[in-house]
Image (cartoon, rainbow, N blue to C red; front, side, top):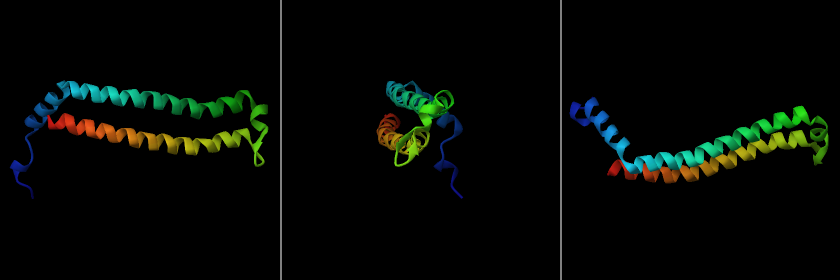
Length: 108
């Protein structure tokens, strides 16, 4: 069992969080995250729903053969897997920078 002194009191934890929240570096961290997360989310949602819209409104186009005997609907649907993987890889790379920024905010 850990000793009571090994954990900060709830008041101390709350006070330190309020202090961190007021720092300009913390505000910059939030802005940096929003600059990536919002456009990436919009891109993902638009890309995802584009398949549904294209299949619904332009079924004849989506039925045409694209390549390897596959039609455009299947090609687009399968393209969503690499798109999600690429987006996740980009997120991981960008988020590593946020981790560094967060560590700097906590240190100060």
